[in-house]
Length: 220
Image (cartoon, rainbow, N blue to C red; front, side, top):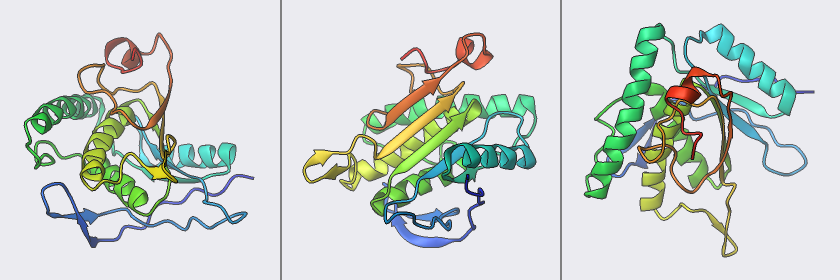
């Protein structure tokens, strides 16, 4: 049987610092993971695509939980309609490119360029789990790919600066410390941002899907 999906409890905690030294507010940091067989419970964070309401998002979470048996936690990117969703996707993609360029010149205070609450939440979750020695598994659909790309770039800059990424265990690099599965991702094409090196990726595409034809990273 699949686990019931759970919405994360919203808490405000402080104490984790970003690259610029300021504390990161953690908006979505807790879930009742449980523990089976003495090992780490599988937790999947799912980021939704364009034009998805909260009810549909929860239905998707339950489906993933039923199919995988994992604890599923939604990172909900609220829809504001097709035009605004597409505009937000464009900004997420553009921000990845600009922030990467600025980081190459040593500019570290980057998150003020463009704010996406879903990307910030996912960034914090990635940072917290890696710091806690837990694996990160993300599933993202359509627009969620762009959100995930932005969150990963920002999170890995923090974790790399702290010496926590790549993740090593007994001197060996753990390649599945962060895994990402995308479905019709709308992240920017290589080399203009796309997904950062390090995590393990698996991309699923439909060649006639609009995000794949116009915008995706799946030609990497």
